[in-house]
Amino acid sequence: MNKDQISIVILAAGKGSRMKSPKAKVLHSICGKPMLYHIIKSSLEISDDITVVVAHQKDAVIEQISSFFEKINFVIQDADNFPGTGGAMMGINPQHEKVLVLNGDMPLITSDALKGFLTTDADIIMSIFDLDDPDGYGRVIIEDGHVQRIVEQKDASVSELKVTTVNAGIYAFSKSVIEKYIPLLSNDNVQEEYYLTDVISMAKADYLNISPLLVDEEKFKGVNSKKDLSDAEVIMQDKIKAHWMNAGVIMQLPSTIYIEEGVTFEGECIIENGCRLTGNTLIQNSHIKAGSVVEDSIVKNSDVGPLAHLRPASYLEDTHIGNFVEVKKSSLKGVKAGHLSYIGDAQIDEGTNIGAGVITCNYDGIKKYQTIIGKNVFIGSDSQLVAPVQIEDDVMIAAGTTVTSGKIEKGSLALSRTKLKTIKDFYYKFFRK
Image 1 (cartoon, rainbow, N blue to C red):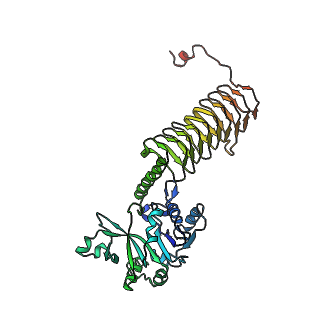
Image 2 (cartoon, rainbow, N blue to C red):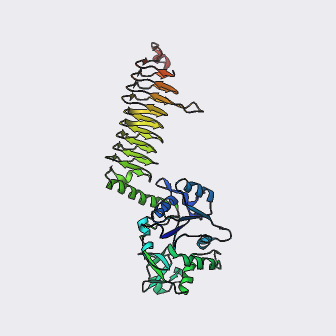
Image 3 (cartoon, helix red, strand yellow):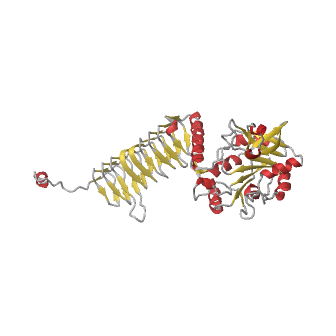
């Protein structure tokens, strides 16, 4: 597809007051990314000229979106003097002859859903839905395949109220329409705003060709509340999981699994029920068992869980992580950690066994320190490794040992225990029996 056929303008300037949040609406997250991210990602598949119009919390919006994409044009709307969707289009300078205007709160839009705007030829292309119950929507009156007018429900006649075709709110304009009619917009209305829909009526008065384009309501779903946000996330989750299952991933009870947009799978993978996979996680030929959380980590030829937690920057290869094991910013290759352990800021080599209750004491309240463990090390249960510490190959750490030495040399046994002391009949004295 040639990306030089259409320019895309995304309106992302609104406050989104119905979200009841101090955060800008377009920055609310769906499947791990701001909703605006998803719209831009789809837009870039069909266009090389993307403009995002910002106003409310403009610095935060620009900063976050710029962390994901390069070469996005940002235009700051003068919302005080030129409010409204028409005001947002003032100062736009599109590169191409067709201009598609999207809303920043439609995260389910796909590039395929937008292709209809490329293949339809008209001065204005107006998206429409056909609803079983159009109550509350403005009706779009179509005759001989052309839009004649938009009638608000309160102004509609009895016959017009029977029309089920409504405005979906997305438009494609020829560049000449933008250049001619945007400067003519007026805010002479109750809300004192500049409305993009007024371009439709002016263009119709000049007998321009306005074609309707029937679109999928789900893909053009707007997010205006946190309920809408949740509904949209469910739809996107279903899409993400269907994609990976069709690619060969086994998911048990997929409705209970959460997978973010940046997660990828390679080879034969099994994801059990109740798992949460986030960030830019890679799962390769691995089994993630029930109730486990994997955040921004790489798991290769390994099994994790049930009820394990891989925190960001963890790397597992040929490793077994059992239940109630937490790993953070650590590299484990050929390791077994069966249960009830914390491994943080560590490098552990092949053949090593981590016993139950073992922890790396990696934080002194100010700084984080690293633990390095070599090959074929056996660490007994309930041991503490006080970092920074290095344990060389072929070492045994006896159960209950606290390792504070900087290095345990190859082939050694490390053992620290106090002598067991017993006090005869203490139980009876304590409870006065």
